[in-house]
Amino acid sequence: EEQPVKPANILNIVATNQGKRPLTPSKPKAKPLSVGDVLKLVDEGCVIVDARSSAVFGAGHIAGSFNVQLTSSEFEQRVGWVTPDDSRFILVTDKDAQAQEAIFKMAFIALDSQVEGYLEGGIEAWMKAGKPLQTVKQMDVFTLHHKLHTNGLQVLDVRDQEEWDEGHIEVAHLMPYTSLVPQLDIPARIDELPFAPEQSIAITCATGQRSSTAASLLLRHGYKNLYNVTGGMTAWEDANLPMLDGDGNACGIS
Image (cartoon, rainbow, N blue to C red):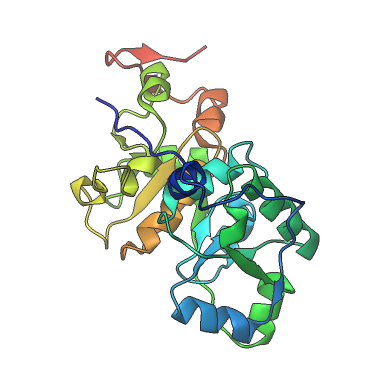
């Protein structure tokens, strides 16, 4: 049975219904933050939402960041799904103008009031200040197929059950990315993963976006040797690589 997903803005729904949270009256604006501001806010418990692409996030990001791609049609919902309900947010984007787009999208579900601002100058500013970066390696589907039975590589599929049933990698383990964090009164299932934090894990979804979000969640729990599968199962299927359906039968090979 699939785990129910909390409303992405559950605290704001309650507050609005109780008359404690007015709807945003005008288009919100994100405030620019210096590297020093970001460090201070993180110390105070703010969380970083890195809204850049999976590949750019993987090349270098601030440790502890949640990677939720601004290009996703579910951007604001995904932010709400994977971050703690009472989070205060710091945004990281490729361009400062994209931070305004991000907070505008977050306003659709009343998360804009929880945005402290954005890192002005993005990751380049962070690097110029001499601050460290964390990385997530990227792996294409051909490399994954080649390495499936070597070096103890594990595969985690973070799609939904229906997607899994349509076609998945035989040795993969299924856990939807939203199950890696608490949902409503259901605790996170991350401890159910059959992997040790030191193992090498390739993470896949449909296109490589949710898998990068999942990688950012696993990094926060001490997993280190992670690979984001670029192109996800769409690329895997396009390459005519072997898959099984939900009944364990071969599928998807033309």
